[in-house]
Image 1 (cartoon, rainbow, N blue to C red):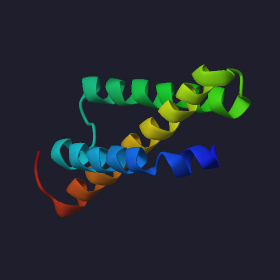
Image 2 (image 1 turned 90 degrees about the horizontal axis):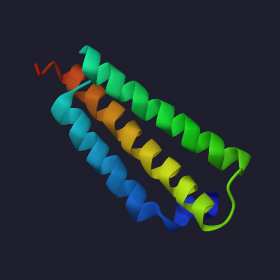
Image 3 (image 1 turned 90 degrees about the vertical axis):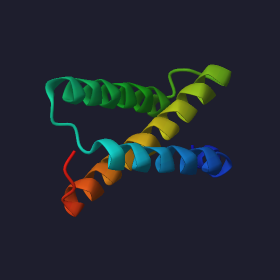
Image 4 (image 1 turned 30 degrees about the horizontal axis):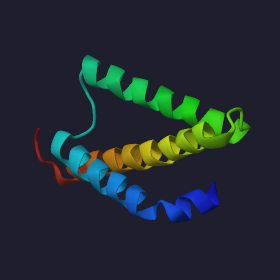
Length: 93
């Protein structure tokens, strides 16, 4: 997976940047629907990461799963960082 991360660094950087922008524009989730959506994305990340770590899927499909886990993780990390930045700045929604 390390080789995959090194070969996909432009995509990971773009996902992180997009997450930062989205997190900074929307802030951290506080309403019921937003919290449910965030929980669904985190469960999806956990499932993808579990499949990637356990190596249950081989071949090209396994590559897609590992790539999706890395990109979704970078996007969600960017969303959290952007939301924390918005909360720290004190800007209202």
